[in-house]
Image 1 (cartoon, helix red, strand yellow):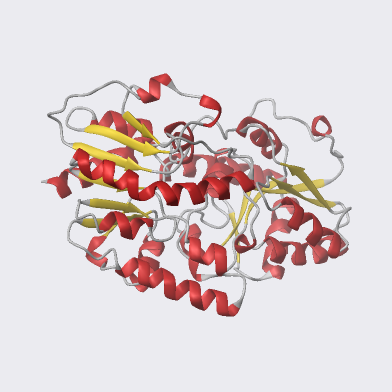
Image 2 (cartoon, one colour):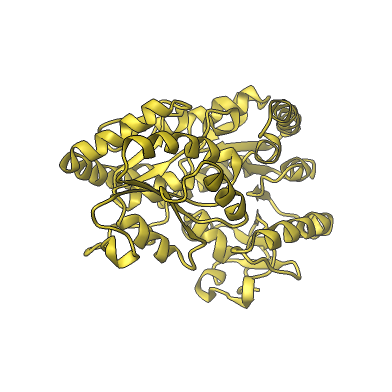
Length: 403
């Protein structure tokens, strides 16, 4: 538990299943938000326990931490699901503890099904941070599943339309998606998604392909993050069959996993792409991921053209842009608010394999222009995903709701 703070200050509860050390990476404005709130509020962070007992003392000095008696292994997909079930089982007791604190406001950063609605029902002023649409992630692999996911999500979103409840989104497109699901537009606030400065960044010198066990003569294009079907990995592999037949010297690199690696390897083998696709597996640190990205000819940000993906800004987008490497991204409406085709990245038409291949060919055809666009993407990332601006916007929203 962090340093005790004045009981006279109004309490703001930050609810997220992962501990602050993990959240400070996933949502890098957490430190700045704690600083912005400190003069007027007491920040209480409610979560699972720290993995392996690791604690950031400096971060925890900025808040009081209430932990449940278990932790999660972020690199273990099975453990993440098991601990998520435990999180649900303990949620009622945790909300009871929160109500006993009589907080002035709750920031609900947990978007798992039913949780934002349960928080909103407490009657405590609540900011719901939208991000992943979990029903679509879990059920959206088939037509009937997508219809069921849409119905469940709309039902959940409508339950948020309560007095003193606001929902924040990262883009105008995401706001339109939320409104289409039933959220009152007057309750939707656009606040940029902050980037994580200093972790994903250009390296000088950058690692060579040979240092990572790759062939210097080949072209490599990397996609990275947690592997799951809703992102469109199967679609990407279908397109790569055409790529491999057309460009024998191109390779797809899949960085990451956390549960989806076995499925992905089977899909690669099923398409006969073992020689054209390389999987790194789960890399131990973000710095290792950054080294791989810095050696790539381009970084891919791919999402299907599905309702749950329309307005999102994937973390892979701003992390990819932050490397300064050329980024090739799906031209979905939310992503297209950030990446301007041919200016600070390359966009391709969603669900269009020919457009995807054409975008990669533009990168390879003019390496000088691609490098210039990659540097422009780095500047665009710093402009759009500013942590301090995100923290100050949250402080202003909190002030307005409490007043």
